[in-house]
Length: 276
Image (cartoon, rainbow, N blue to C red; front, side):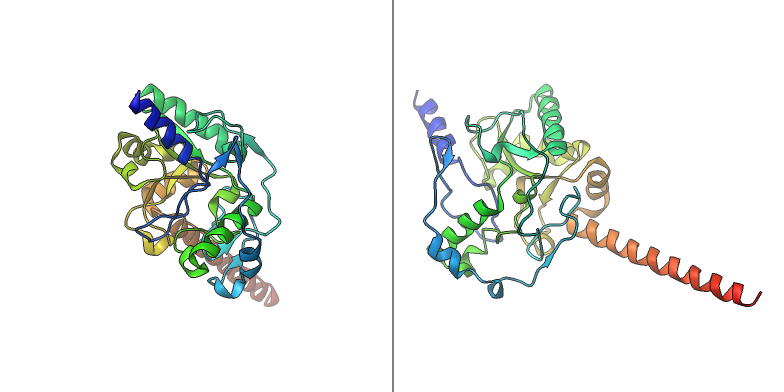
């Protein structure tokens, strides 16, 4: 009975906004929910004090609908962006309420459902923790943390509005069936984390913040944070690039090289025809 009450208590406290911790050994108190609905944070004064000058220089991405869109501390979503194909993922979560963070974009939700089913067949039980988060919700959360700890400190564990992958509808935090290590470092040593690290790419997901690549991603190792990029990109990242940043940079280089080669061929053709 004591174990049952402990699990219930843990599940309640982990009704959270999701991950977003960065190179920090300590984590902020998690956001609680009341009656299945996220509580309104008292953040109006903090929100008004947030300024872009306090944030690393960022660029607004032009292709937010792309499943391989790079969103991080230097690449942010348009402020008005909201995914057009959000659906409720039909997988178990650590909570029962039908709320926003159960949602994902449709292709990610479908892939997640398949991943959960196949994991279950292999004796791996998984639970969702936090999926989609609206831009407004991210603003509330970041403003709350900035008011409590100061904006500089808040940025070490929480994503600035527009730079959180959860706003894409393509990212989800997961945990094991017991719910014991939800969005916690101890998840790394579980059978569920080991299974995901070896198999997630087959369903189009990557471990977005892999171990040892903190300087590349800007975030510490988060074995619970899955990002949907599609099967082809996921296989490339798993086998060659390790991070979405490296993959995106390679694609950008290849595009520049292709454009240069095309331009060079066009010039050659013009010179050739001018001598005919």
